[in-house]
Length: 342
Image (tube, rainbow, N blue to C red):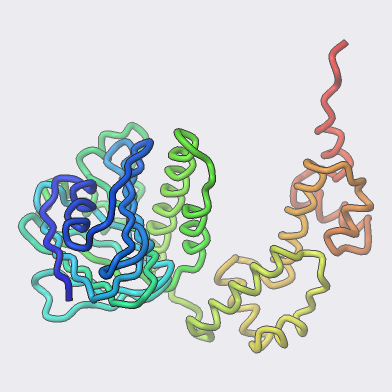
């Protein structure tokens, strides 16, 4: 095992400490600092992006060739860390723990230590790790004018106001597939320069919101659906992505059950848990969103769009479009026509 001891005043120094032990090159552009490694120790990247008000992103997309343990000292730089493995898994523990806790793929983790404590993260060898870490330095974040931590639940509020790092805290979350879609978006941004950083920052705050929302639910005792296991929820998420990519197909509940190998009852439970909609409601929602985009971006008439998204009745389409958006498709299309000034 490679043990990497980290005593740092900021995340950039964390990246430099990792580089000392596993090699690679560091490139910095538009405040995005990226360690790229391709040697006997590891293959992949670790990137760090700082934002305003003490918020930063540390993203791992790497495969280690040996087990790796990060021994992170909680000193002056001791942020709250919100962690999410999109791919792979790892183990977390504090120095006071005898045994670590396994954090599985799609499971969230929130933790911070008291001053003088040590955080241990253990990454397995031979596993592609895509681990998203959002870090918040409390003293800086609380100076942000729009920060209103009084709206947080009692436990998170106590952690955010602990600016002298007198307490340690950890929260092992449950399966969160919605977060996976946002973390994926971070790696698919193609813009450059300032626009790229702004796009990434916006998604980081969306992910942070999901961490807080999930923490609230678990504090309130809202569990995962007992009828479904993790692999079944992953299957349902893939099914939903298929519908999103090809909304015009005739998706009956019976057909989807056969395709997924899940019962109709499990499909309904899964869609309600992941998307707050029944299967039928989700399909209708996707089709209406696609229809609105087609009206906005193409010259197709309403009848053509109805056919394109898989509906057969124009009157029914107009009815549910108005129910969702408060305006008929024709009225929506007319509003997009800007009169030419004479």
